[in-house]
Figure 1 (cartoon, rainbow, N blue to C red):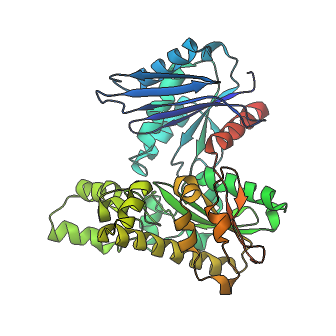
Figure 2 (tube, rainbow, N blue to C red; figure 1 turned 45 degrees about the vertical axis):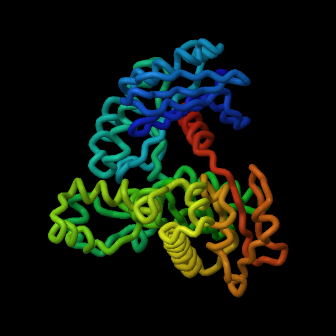
Length: 398
């Protein structure tokens, strides 16, 4: 257990946690604290073959963590005495300050909190989770791993917005990109599956979950990505709009009288698939499509249309493409999205095998035809393992 890392992903009303063996990749224990601050709070966890569950009010993140740690002890895993090498925390926004794994100090935590202006839906929750975990495990090194870090090396042409340069500099306005831990991990796995050197591959990675992002990767380095200053830009998502005309914001302010907070809520929580057809779960969306629901059909068409635009743009940007990979909940599990996203691209050397695409499987796998010039893959992401490895590497180096 000495080399294990506890990985914590703290959201606005939930905390995901996993105890990971970084070398072997196995999860020793995992669980989630859900509906924090609500009367019907829920904690579920598994350690080896033992499951545990708690239902009832969970006042805040600190109580949620205490409860989870207590439940782990009851099923035979006392984290405080387990000799954990590090606690790795997912932090969404590192701004221009943090672009590599960082040992958390009071100064670092204060800066992460300050960066909440760039990620108001994410960084505050990350900070709360870090503070709670540090109280519970004060003698273990805590490491922040940033979603934005992988995209720190985007070339200036890709990271720069065409607005007044002084305003951009004064307010740190640039493309940061998100889901970086996932994109980096998946790109490395693609090289392994194909038996090729990561440095020679040009890839498009499509992280399609409730939040969704695309990246163009050349030689292992990201050269472009769909999310921007915030995780709102880019692909159509579960509840987020993705790309829109910026003039819509001023139009809604002037025409509908909506204030900034109302518009922010609209674009982040009431848009995307949910805004267009009332649901953001792809299982429910598929059921509505099969039932002939016109709003659901249109929402799906908009989703795929945007996805294909980014694939086309990145194909041109890279010039030569070796692999397209689908990952995350939708990317890994919804065959119709994969098929429709790449339909009709045979002339560009991209051919999906319909049998392979619809075959059940949980591991990394090829779904392209044997004759496809571009490999098409499904690769399960594992952000927890990636965070664990980065955290323990930093601690060992120090």
